[in-house]
Structure formats: structure tokens, C-alpha cells
Image (cartoon, rainbow, N blue to C red; front, side):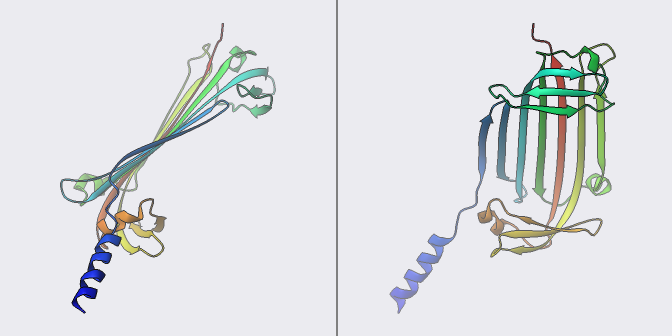
Length: 212
């Protein structure tokens, strides 16, 4: 009947989820560890979907002992009785400057961003590129190091599986990858054959501070 048809159409309209847009931030803490995650989704002026994912992990520990000869360091997380022994790479300078009671700080950040749109000529040229940079503390100072890794990829959406909530993409190198959608309601904004520009970066900064 006409009433049944109207009811069916109405229910279908209600069941269709609105896209997830906006920002979300979450954090978690444990002794000596602080983790923060942030993500966002938006619509580009061209109409394509865009998003960012960022994870930052900060770790602090106290030096319990240092074996310079064997390049080993024993660390303890604040508020914990457990200690762990780590092997220190030859790349780390100035290990002899470290002494018990010093504070070790490590910060790790991973970021990924994507934009569903046509890539520029420069982005097509750089697709698949990866740049790594590193730095170490000067000789004689407290140990410290920083590493940065950045890259860019252009991919094509090959298929969208709404049942499994997955997207399959192919890079310009021919490699195929299937990823799980974090927000399945946004799959309706994607189409097979669309291009996406993906940029990613990760960094590690580590250092030792003297606690007077």
C-alpha cells in the first residue's frame, strides 16, 4: 500500500548515517607514559573527504645505573618498582655523561593525512618518496638524538566494501593495500576510481636531563 511504501522509504532515510566530520582527541596515562591521539575529518572545497590521524607518545624514566663499558643502562618508570636494562647503540654519544638519578625523556609522534582529490603534477612526481633526517647531541653534552621520517603517496581507490567496512587502494607502484575504515559512515563519500594524496611523518626525539 501507499502507507507501507512511505513507511519503508522513511525508515531507509533514517537508517542512513550522516558522515562523521569534526575532531576527536583521546588520551591515556600509565606510570611514565602519556599517549595522546587526535583525528579529524572534513570536506575539501572540491567536495572530497580529508582527514588527519596523529599519535603522540611521551615516555619518562629515571636512570638507576649506567655501564659505560658494556653500553647498558638500567631505567625505572616513575611510580614503579620494576627496572629494565637496555643496550645503548654506538650511535648514542656521551653515554659517560649519564649518571644515576638523571631523567630520560623520549617523545614519539606519528602523523598521517589524506585528501581525496586529484594530485598536482609535483605530487605525482614525488609519490613514493621518503626522506629521513637525523641529528645527535654535540660531543661532551648530555646524550640526545632526533630522527624524522616523512613521505608522500598518491593512490587510487580500487574498491569499497561496505559490508566489511574496508577500502582497497592501489599505489602508483602497482602495490595494493586494503585498510579498515575507522568511520564506516564516511564510505558513502568515496567512489571507485578516485585519487587520494597521502602524507605521513614520524619523529623520535630522545634526551637525558640532569636533575639537580
